[in-house]
Each structure stands twice: as C-alpha cells, then as structure tokens.
Image (cartoon, rainbow, N blue to C red; front, side, top):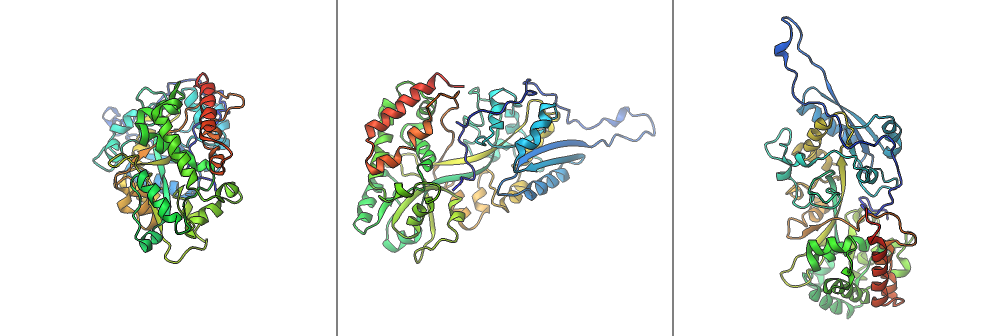
Length: 455
C-alpha cells in the first residue's frame, strides 16, 4: 500500500546535522582551463572535475543512475561522476556531512522518515537553483524552463521560503486521480463525468444496477483528492491559505463547498469500505473497481502494479481521470506527487551540480529514466510512453491542471495531527459516526493550534 512518491511535507523535522551551518557554498568555476598562459612545450591541464552524486535507491533501482551519469560524462568531457546510491542514503552520507564532506547533488525527496531534506530546508542550507531554469540543457538548444511542465517549480515544495526562488528541482512524478474500469463504461455506454453534478447523476444510475459510485483504499488517499478539490473550488490562493492555516479559512463559502462535496460523496461510497480501509485489507477496496462493485477510486499510478495479479471482470481495462470540475467549464485538477533533487549549500562543485541537474531534463536522460518507469515532468513526455503509462501521464496534456503542495510544516503541537483530522475522519463520515459539522469543528481546532507553530 505504500505510496511510491509520498510527499507529505508535514513530516517531523527530526534529523539535525551539526555541520550544516552555512548558507553559502564554495563552488568551483566551470570555465575551461586557459592553456595560453602555460609555458612553451608544457602540457595543457587535463584535470578531471569530479561531481559527487548521492541518490536514494527506490523501486527504479540503482543501475538507472549509473547509466544516466555515464551519459552525462559523455556530453560533458572532462567530468567524472562519483555515485553513492543506497536505500538508506541518509545513513550513508550523514556521517561524512557531519565532518564536512558533502555530496554536490542529492536526489532525496521530502517526506522521508528521517526528514533529511526537510532539515536542510529548515536550516537554510540549500543552494539557490533558480538559475537552473534559464540554463540551456547540455546537448540541446532549449532551456530547462522551456522543457518543464508549467507549475512544477511554483510549489511550496520547490520554493520553500515564499520568495519566488527555487531551491529544490522537480524530478520523477506520478499523477493521481480517479481510477475506473473503462471497459465497464464502454459496455454500459456511460460517459465519464466532467462535473460533480454529472457524477451524482451517474451515481444514481449505477446504484439502480447495484453498483456503488465510490470506493477508496484508505482515508490516507484523500490527501491528493482533498488538495485537488481545494484548487478546483477556490484556486491557488485559496489552496495556499487553507494549507497554511489562515484564520477563518474553514468557515468560508469555498471551504463549505469542499466539505459538502466530500460529505455527499461519502453517502455514495460502498458501505463495506471503512471496514477494509487499513494496511491489511486495503486491496479489497481496490478490488471493488476490478469486480464492477464500485465505479471510481482515488489512487496513483502504482495501483496497476499492486493489482496486476488480481482477478478482474471480463473486459476490464484501466481508466483514469482528473476530478470532475465544480461547474461546467471549470477547472479540473489532478494532484501529482513528485520527487526532488537539490544541492547542499556547502557543495564543493555547485555550478557543476547545476549543469548536471539541467542535463536530467534532456531527451536523452528522460529516455533512460523512462525505461524503468521513472517519468520526468517534461512537456509532451506522455507521447513517448506506451501502455497504461501513456494514459496516466497524458492527463495534463488533456486539459487537467496539476495540483501540488500540502499542509505547511509546523513545529510539533502535542495531540495535533492535521492529516488525521482532515483525512482520517472520512471513514466516520461514511459510517455516519461523525457529522459534517463535527468534522469541520475538529479541522478548525487543529488548524488554529498549528497556525502559531508555522515554520
């Protein structure tokens, strides 16, 4: 059940690095050695520049990084990349950093248990990467900004200080949305709803045939759903205010609309879902889609792998859509999880690290990553994919907007967990154990407690 790209930025900031005390790194120049001043008959300098890369080994494996770094060495002669790739990368590089030996570039997303990336963010120990956006990608003639899908460098994750500067660059991403059996829709002649009114109408039609409108694996899957809905109802400004605990935000008309929609959706949810919405039985809730016992469920692209060996109805084939718009012609959103790559402030070769990061958005690097299912947030990347991945990653090409970000990080407040208050109560809404008013009151109380603890 573990989400491959979970980015819950509300993770506790527990790891402290004594050596991370400066916000200004010493970067070596990328200018080639000038041989015009060498003595006659002297051999020009052929000194190799070394870039130290540290990367978390995920389901994509370690070999893909070795292939990418070898390709980078070919496009940038005179550069050697030393790689440290490990499933416990924080433990591997932590001791060296405490003694002043920092990698030049680190691929490690927020949301990890040991919160190394969050620690660097909190302590202002990152190199400003804003200029990477204007860099020409090595081996190509376009800039990084021209290549990236819009919005991926305008988030509270990539721009953590609210100053318009980018300190973490986006890497592999996974769109989320509503998964369904496209084969069933074809058999029934049903259209995928584009608005919530159409969703309720379909729910009534399906109910008459003994099919529930909705299922969910666990309430934790409402994070991406909730964030996308905040954007649909109130736009980016409302999303920012809500996720930063603005006073009175949960009593606004926009918030009420969000709560109303989710409460109504709870009434259309298959009643057996709450009992199985746990780490042991969550696949039973996902199986409802494969068995045509429910129409939609929120999930991410990893669900295909999770359910690859599960039985399914005749004619089953995966379908995927963004959340329905609030009104006809309104915006439809799909939340995306994405990983990040960054440069410590004390990196010895920060300029070379920036060049390497720019290369990661090249067609060449993207093709290498794509072979193992790691997809970069590059425009029209979906056209280069096939199978289910082509369907999933084309969601933003088909009009949906990308939603990113999460509840703002705070200092710990005893007894308060905003995720539990917002998402964890969905089971109780479905069973009727909790009313919408009680839910809102709990969220408001938690939000008020966290406001003064903002980082």
